Image (cartoon, one colour):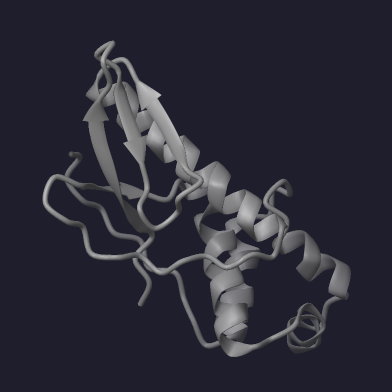
Length: 144
């Protein structure tokens, strides 16, 4: 089971803004005026960075355990299904063409499912994941 949240560091700069960084994803940095804004910006930054990595067909790092003082930041829902499909296909070595064959679809449809800019319905992502022996499970947790 994958956890779709990443540890983030939060620290204040000399002007009082809260700087956020992700140790697992070094290129992801943002900030906020206060903690609430910093968390909101961190979620958006994490989603954008993951979307960019998927579009570039780059590696998505596994989530590390949070260290003292770090907060777990969830991957936003708008990219979570695409991330699940991308990680599963990568782990199983399944190509777009192979998944399309299993689903009885054209390869271009699978390509669109993996396009972070394409608004693929969650039901289609669920069907694709089921063809790979996976399913999406949603959990509700207390807000930080």
